[in-house]
Image 1 (cartoon, rainbow, N blue to C red):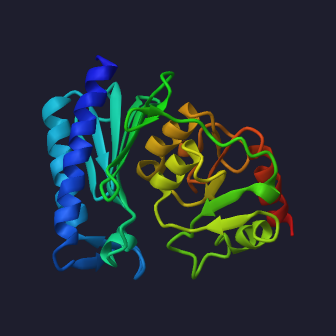
Image 2 (tube, rainbow, N blue to C red):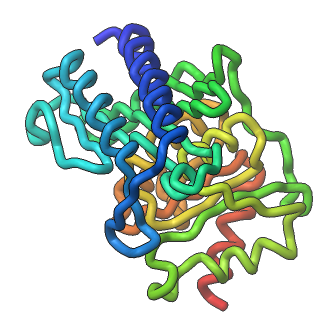
Image 3 (cartoon, helix red, strand yellow):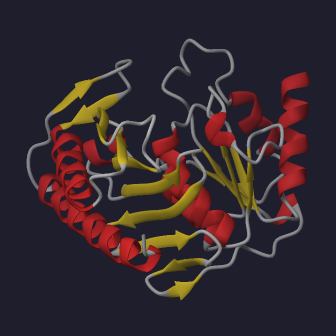
Length: 269
C-alpha cells in the first residue's frame, strides 16, 4: 500500500463528500433522532456516508470500514490488516441548524487501531487537514505546528458536551467551570474533529472532551499529534481510542500536563 496514493485518493473522496454536504445544506433538512432527542441524524449524513463507503470499498476491498451511521463493511474485521473509520458529517447539529461549521472525517488505522492516516475536510472553508503517521500534519499543503503558549492564563481552550449530559453526572460541567476562571477564553464549536485540527494549527491551545467515538476523533488525533500535540485520555494513556468512555485531551506539550491536572482536580472536588 502506497501511503501517498492512499492519501491522494482519500482526499478526493473527502472533498467530494463535502460537496454533497453543501448541496444538502441548501435544501430543506430532514432529521431524525438516534440515542436521544439531542442526538440527531440527517439525510445528508446517510447520503454522504453511502458515497464514502462505496468509494472506499471500491478502492480498498481488502480493508474493513466502519461508518458512524452503519456497521462494518468490506473485509472481515477479524482478518483485515487495515480499518477505515468514517464520520460523514461531524457537527450534525450545526449542519441541521444551518451553522457552517462541520466536517468530513476519515481515519485509516492498522489492525490494532493505531492511526496511520487522518483527513478532516471542512467544505465551508475548503480546508483540508491531513496527516500520515510520521510525516507531519498539513492544511491545504502548509505544514502545521501547535501553539507555543505555555501558561493556561494565556490559553484558548475548547471542549464539548456529550449527548447524555442531561442524565449523566459526568457531564463536563465541572471541568468547564474549573477552566473558565483560569484561561484566557473558552470555546464550544460542536465538531470534535475540527477542534483537534484547530489544536494542530494553533487556533486552539488545548481541547478536551468525553464520550467521543473513534470515528469522531481518530483522524483529528493523528493530525494533532503530527503537528506536535500531546493527545491522551484524561489519565495520560496514549490510546484514548481504546477507552469505552472516549475521553480525549489534546494540547501542546507545555499545556497538556497543566490541563490534565485541572481535570483530575475537578473530579476530586
